[in-house]
Image 1 (tube, rainbow, N blue to C red):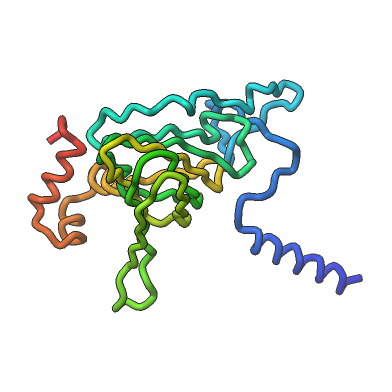
Image 2: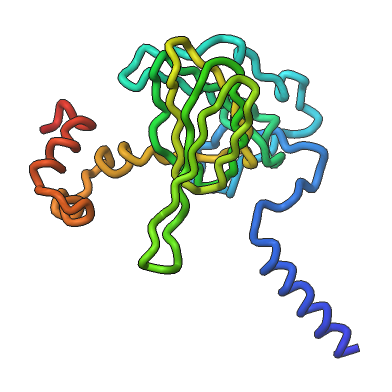
Length: 227
């Protein structure tokens, strides 16, 4: 009996270690409630009473509408994650529409919680991702790139820095699927040069091996009214 209890304890411990990922849903659905204003936080969203769930909780409308690319980058991302579609809560998936003006850029960024499957519907894009730091300090991070045409699918592994740029003279449209209800996004330039408060310029100057005035200039691009 004691041996059996020990075995069960070992199995439970092993399961808790190997299951270091989002757990599978324990019910058909868990429609997200709006973020509450209490001091209680959970890893995800609270569930709506199943008896109050309606079909609209699983519906998002508007991905047929192009995003506004009239900005410095010439691109727009319309996200459909758990924050826009409550029915995605606990289901481990989300998606986005990406619009590109001619030569528009979706700048280098990462999704810390999801792999991205990227489908190009219209136009021509140059895309790529960079690997994490290699174990061998004498090797460099490797860049994988490809020119995409309509109908092509490219995969960006979870957490790796990647980008897309329109190399055509016409608009481009793509859709992306993510393996998380909330994949998150970290835009590298914004995070490094536009954080609040600012990263000490001396730290960045040493990291990028440039003069401090260059860092000051770059930070000013993200803080135009706070020089």
